[in-house]
Length: 436
Image (cartoon, rainbow, N blue to C red; front, side, top):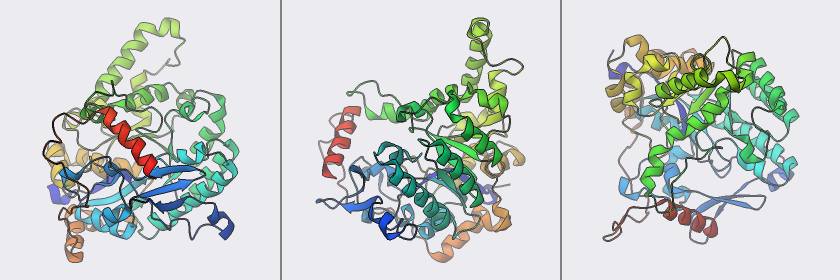
């Protein structure tokens, strides 16, 4: 095997929703109250819903921009690469990047759809959340069989509606849902509360995979407002360990051994020590903690249930025996700032080429296929979905990968007198909201 033979499935990408996304999925009356795509006085875009304004933030869609123009300033859709909001253009960008298939999380509504939870009128939220899912499954994924893994969002404030939506999504061919990793942050009961039992059963009955994306409930902490922002960015993937430890203690995992949980955008290098620590803590404290773990160690349960997803993790890939080669999958993170587009095959090959061909297949696509009940080979041959096959399509379509200025201001002389800090970013968020 060489780089051009790779088949790469990304289990974590993102979409900047198009302005007309609700138009074909709601009645005129429901469309009138749906989230609206708006333009500020300064020309930047934002979404508005039930009094909440959500500006588009730079780092969320920087694919194709020069590094010097990365930042947190508000943006307009015209500044973005078309693959951010148009699924046909996304497929072109996947082809040139050697990505066979992609699972995409939402943008303005939150990776887990938490916008619909936070606004006051939940009856409207339920209508618009369902329309959001219809757009995602039917319009974003539907026109491109075998190229997208659908992932729905749920009205978790209403358990009856949540169960109904899980079954409705499953009937539409959607095999995964995105959840908040700490629902108490949304004013809901913790995952250890019996409130969630009907959802666990529906998840199992439909063989649906749960995705827990970083930042949905447990944010990556920053030490102070004066801390350079790179410190916060560096720790983001590892912050998912807080949620992982909590979900590892979920009683439903012992009652439902087939439950599947993907730790999205969490990377893998931290996992070996995390598992060692969980087992050590269990050994030292199980006598008084009334531990749920009896026949199985915490590490056994983790390796049975949790898929670990990486963007670039050389250390983790050198230690896959400590993580479990059947529970690792690749993620591209398009169009976020960590995304290696259009050079994923080159960067990925350099970190996996020491593995056996079987292991390479597992971490690049077959684990993802199994975990998400997804078979792209029903629609395309392996040769067509290989890096070589996809890049041939991109060449024929003349996909342009030249970095393009978005019109955002680059750093000016004197701007680098001190590092950008967490406080600077908080101020930028505040100003962006005011501009909206």
